[in-house]
Image (cartoon, rainbow, N blue to C red; front, side, top):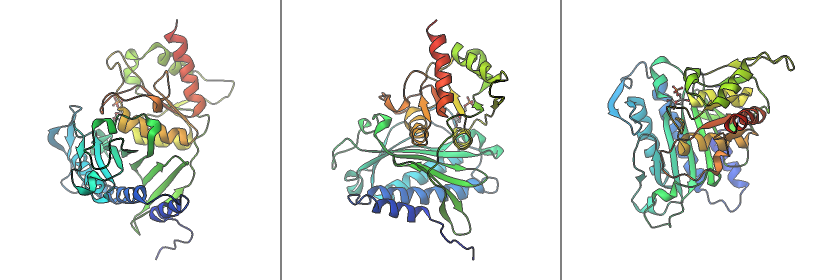
Length: 340
Ligand code: P6P
């Protein structure tokens, strides 16, 4: 029997945090508990992906026109089922579904929250055993209880998020989330099947030397980004800390590494994609909430990600996030070259 002295499980943490808020009535706790269960189910499938028939294109295409891998669909279904079972979610916006999913039953109609998710981000990496992730964001609905939820429930500024986070299915599986009072990381202990608090109160370094961007897009990048990359590549003798490029093509994996070590992740607008590639509701907003709660920064190059008023649920935005001083430096280059 593994000794688990002083290890706090996700459920114990949620209950303890709920005790800190006497007026909390437990709905968010219940929703997070069901999220944890779905994460364990998806983790089991991801870990066995090479062994059982969940690999390969599902044949359909998602709203982004990307081939749906079976694991994408599997993850989408299980997180939808978990939110329905929680009884605390009224509707879902998912990368895998063009329209919002409404729980039009007694529980759903009276639920307080709506849920945005990318159920399995980085899915093109599934077949090559690279870390992938689930990204989620939770809002209080603006529609009235008892009425049907609408898209307006999802078109809220990121500052209105009540919780957000991600699961990273990597060398270990971690759930990292915030409810606006700091960022905490939980590592799945397979021997007991529980997420255990392993990274309490995560703070991201204010400076770092990792820059993460797909340099294959170089010729299509804005001038300011090209100049920032050049700045990173020059051996900055003042600090004698040459930068290093790390890019794995999986947002959760790239962001999580930089969160812990210090770094900047950039997916800018390009001459091919005027709004960049990443989606505001279920990629940029939740990651931005985590970044800011950990002492970092997240912008679209001109302003705070969390202050953007969404216009559609699959809206894309340019994304710069990570260590505070690195994002500020990148913005300086953008400001200069956008205004010459
Ligand atoms: P590119 C994965 O498809 C994803 O949405 C993110 O996880 C990742 O950061 C990005 O796209 C990678 O895009 O164009 O560099 O392959």
